[in-house]
Image (cartoon, rainbow, N blue to C red; front, side, top):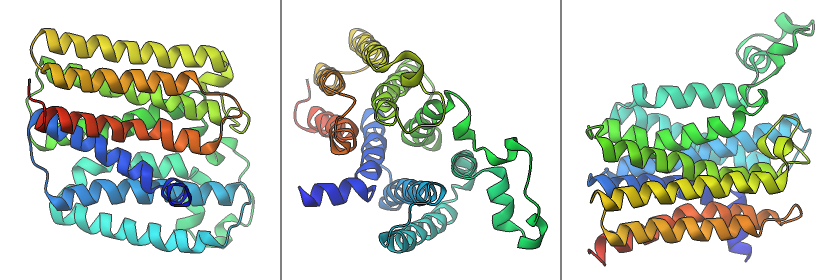
Length: 288
C-alpha cells in the first residue's frame, strides 16, 4: 500500500495513465512510436503535474520538505522533455500544450514577476484579471484538462504519424474526449469543498454530476458499438472498451463526498491503464 501511495502522490501514476492512452492510440491505428517519444510523453506529463502541485502548494502557503526534491525531479524531467522535443523536432506539436500549461499554472501577474526584476512591481497590481489563471475561469478547468489529455494522447500522434482523418478516426477521437471527460468529473467532486471556482459539481451537485459522467460513458459505449457494427474494430476490442466503461461507471457510482484521495487517484485514474491492458490483450491475444 505504501508503494501505491508513493506512485500516486508523486504523479508517477497519472503520467503512466497518459502514456497508456497514447499507446492505445498506437494500437488502434497500427503505428510504432519510438522509445524516445514514449519517454517524452511520460516525462512531459510527469513534470507538468508536479509543477502544478508545487505551484498549488505555494499559492496555498503549504510548504513541504519534500517540495525541494519534487522541484529537482520535476526540473530534470522538464529539461529532459525539452531536449527530446528539440531532438525529435516536435516543438510545433507541443507548443499549444506548453502555452496552456503556462497560463493554467501561472497568472499573468505571477509570470511577469518571474521574468522581470522585482523593482518593477514594488507597487501591487490592482487589476484582478492579471491575478487569475485560465483555470480560474468558471467551468473551464475540466475542458482544458480534457483537451490536453485528448490532444497529447490522440490528436498529436494521429497528426504526427499522418493518420488519415477518416470516419473511424473522428469517432475514436470523440470516444477519447467523452471518456476523459467522464473520469475527470470525479476529481471535481473530490475538490468541491476546496475549489474556489465554479465547476460542474459545484453547479449541479454531486449526484447530478455523476449522471453527467454516466451519460458520457454511455455515449462512449454507443460510439464503440457503432465502430463494431461498421467493422472498424473487432469484437475483442469492443469488449475491451465496453468493460472499461462499465468498470469506470461502477467506480464513479460508489464515489462519496468523503471518499479517500486514493480512491480517486488510484481507482478512477487507473481505468486508463486498465483500458490499455484490455486493448493490449484484445490486439495481441484475442484477435477475433
